[in-house]
Image 1 (tube, one colour):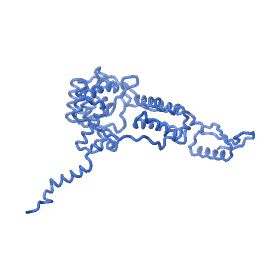
Image 2 (cartoon, helix red, strand yellow):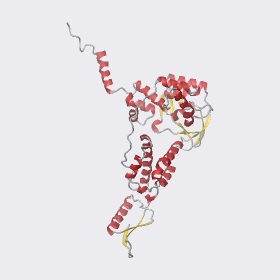
Image 3 (tube, helix red, strand yellow):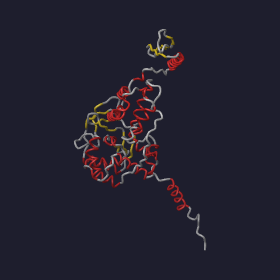
Image 4 (cartoon, helix red, strand yellow):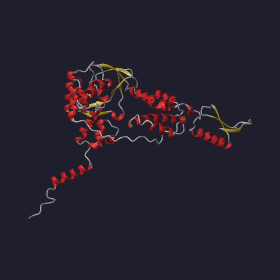
Length: 384
């Protein structure tokens, strides 16, 4: 329980509130008015009773001090950890890193986010904000702060950019522009829609010739200090089975005939404990090593896209191409989402809705198909 006592000596704040926190440590705070002291005493007792107690001094830690502890505790993959560190040190700490957690108000946070606009695109600002919000959410769970300054922050509007898939001719040109060793990779990625790390992580045993399917269950990501590491997929929805047709088996067979797979040692962190194991990846670099995204993008993909006049194209555009083929073939959003490993069809529709036939066209076609085929005499010509 907390208590309120008036000190006998002459002080500007004679009313002293004493209490023991949840750890049993003695705490105290002085007030100039008894009414304020009584109110504070009641708040402390209530928060201790219902488990919402927050140490008045807890939030005086600086944002950077707390954020560095938060960052060290996260189970981020190496490349994600590197991005978070760079983001915090480059954009966040210079602005609010030295401020105490409790001194950053909603207005402070809004000004910080708004001030990022000249230097960062709206999507990058959203990424910065998501990280800061995660840190403040953790601070609130740790009961260092009572109010979250990230609530109701206005972000810059994201531009609505419609995906424009590559054409078949452009995909063919890219496949021809890369070294022969990587031609099969470009064609296989365009025919399966895998993310870059996923296609790099495909092993020979993932291809089931009996069921004519590809099992997607891992990805390759750059490791800290160089090399690569076998990682879990982006989320649980990314684990999927992709049907393979005759064309993709022809691509794989031609590639494996020209570049037979060899076993390589690789660090695998997909299990409970990291292990070094032998793997037979379908696609390797010129030196017979697992593909590293950084070196591949710089030495293989960039020269190819510049050669064919597609300077903005990324390997992810092969994934968009695959999605466009499924949509063109009439597959519904749920199936397309499953093939792409999306969380649900909502994400698929948000990305590719403009590629599906619009409702006006579908309405016209639906009526025309029935009337032209099954009701030829509904409106017979008048007899002369």
